[in-house]
Length: 336
Image (cartoon, rainbow, N blue to C red; front, side):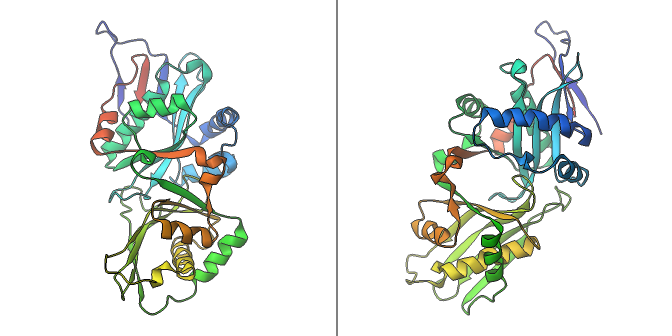
């Protein structure tokens, strides 16, 4: 169903719309990809989702794995801004959310609330469809974007938690972890896997909540894993990885073993995909034992590279509802 909304002007009369925000179609991807190349040029070292080909993008859109909102200039019919997004289960929340992969506005249309209007429209889609959060990555050095997201109510996870980002690739390291995942867990360790609720995403994006428990001391390693298309095609993402240790827990614990951690990560990857291309993980740096183990498994801490300039920000609960209720600019027509 399509509903059309237009905000009235200051005199109470409908303003003449200059832009139209609508759901993007597969044929819009080529034009959006050209804009995304300009986005990459603005942010040196940026790793874009457009590393996938336009053909792959189109197939993923047709499968419902990838979605697009576009802002179109009414006078020319040209796309001047877009949001590329997907469904993501990678969150502590019970409900899946939307992950913003790319947000771009043409230079001639910046500082006219086009980006805010695109995000407000996406927030309205998320809230009205029952999604629990909106999540994105932004560079700390990109002050205008950071300020914009703060004004919109996004919570920067670096302000509340020292979240680290870890990546495993190329293929030889991923394959090594997959081989470890095929080995049985040692006695005393039990792995519980629970499917994420796939109702909202149509089951197209698989997700697992996991907990690895040590029977001897009741230590637990838990988090969420998902096969996701929000970073790269066929990427396994793990988030909210936590090591929970009772005060009376014995040392050393079987959980604090690099070999067992590799078995866990490999098993999670295999439960989601036959041949994932890479592993991407979020974990708190203040848990020093876990941080040390992750590095010993072969994962690279991205904070030591240019990628460390990136920070996760999220919108949940009342803040998400606030974004959904935010009015778009008066010269923008929304047809979503």
